[in-house]
Image 1 (cartoon, rainbow over the protein chains, first blue to last red):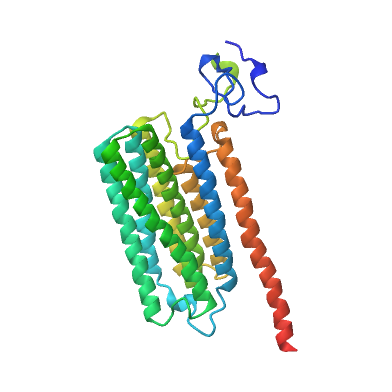
Image 2 (spheres, rainbow over the protein chains, first blue to last red):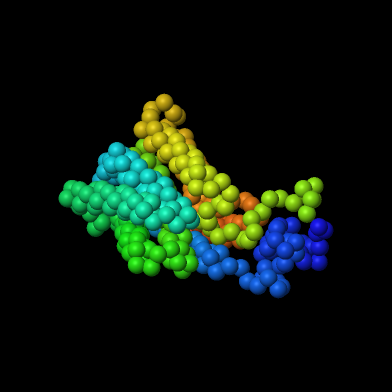
Length: 223
Length: 127
């Protein structure tokens, strides 16, 4: 079978947006008779754009924290406040939950309900463990007089880490919704797309946590 | 199409971010994610170890933590979000590149401007 140069733009080495390997590989998706990309790809791409905008929002909070982390108003500093062991346990919870979330995605791909429920339940429990550790840490800080009103540094800290915690809480609500929807409706195409978006959301939260534990906790503890 | 056509092996469609790889089956997918998890744990443990150690020259610690964090984000992107350099993932990578550009502009720009502002404020308080 010969390659038909007609179907791909000459300045497009990757021949993006084309259906390959079937029907002779000559049908251009989005350009011609092969039609637009599958809905799964479109939905996930749109959600990926949303996640990137969420990351941009977090970058503003990171910038605020980076600018203000020395403005302690003669109050406690990051070095005095943060407990690296607590952060390590939180990190372990979130990292493990990202892995179990992957297992749930794989279970969805092969339509295995028991494994899906098990993986999602473990993800949920690990997320709740993370949230309870964070809540305990926040309560401890406020109890020691290091609440968000103490200094600009602590305001920025509670905003940044609290915003991530809020995302995790919403993620857990979404997770439970997905379990209920799979229970009620099974692995239908639109449910699978929602599970795909949820998995992307959960993995992205872990990426943001990597930045938080590195910049806020580890640099704070070593600095 | 003959194998000598020098065509890269591609999936049928453009891939969505987070799509599970088609080949390899369940075992392959779980193995991929386990490799990602192992790499992430390795980088995390190194990060926490470096932050608490006195073996390393102290000013180099923030740089090391930053490098490890960026490496770990890369691991998460590749192994969990499946953002790869393959041709079927080009759209996702382009969006990511734009996002990274904005993030660096916001964080780098804020730090840069505020550091200069700080210097000016210092001069004002001294006079």
